[in-house]
Image (cartoon, rainbow, N blue to C red; front, side, top):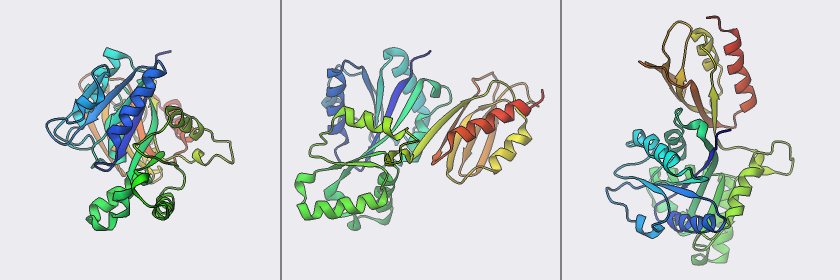
Length: 309
């Protein structure tokens, strides 16, 4: 079976401590004998964090734009390079402070390499000082802060040493009210054990433990591989029946009425089809929240079974 590389997204607002966390994670990965790689995204044309990460860590940079919008087309190339050149056990993607979690996940889950990636979740670093003063931010930035917390699987409540004990309690209460299902940890200098991050993801996949709050999933990425062409009309009926929590889909779909596959994209209920000129791997990536993965896979398998060439 082909090796799958774990993928973690490191999110959080500007100056929250993401790079400090990344350095700590890489140190612990090295001590554990695992090979970790980094995909670093900066809004500017020059990275200021590269030198801080050391010379021995495989990394690629995405400069001059945000991974979730202006440079999505470059993400696949850089991830493919990391996978083929280094075969890492894990890739950590440090996003810009302006990145939206849904868009980032959409950017990295290319149907061409999705089968090689084991998406593990979003680790969000919250600057408690910034969060305390969030009402001084513009409405747009305030909303971004909330959504970064809302979609997290693991939240580091960082810079606790700079906030009073009373304020810490109030801030923790506010953040957990936004996202009660994520594991939250108070930190100074983003100190966290690697095992905490990895074990959190393993627990989150347990669907049977009544005491395990992490069985409630946040953003998910489901990768389905079609074995043959399907009926387009039946596929579109399936699309109309999807829940509102399916945010994105993209991939290559082969229909029974065409020799070559289509590049298919779906965003918040709107499907787009584009003709491809060559055969492509028939992988479909589905991104959403609180999705019933087993049910979706069964529905797609049924589409294939019922399609007549």
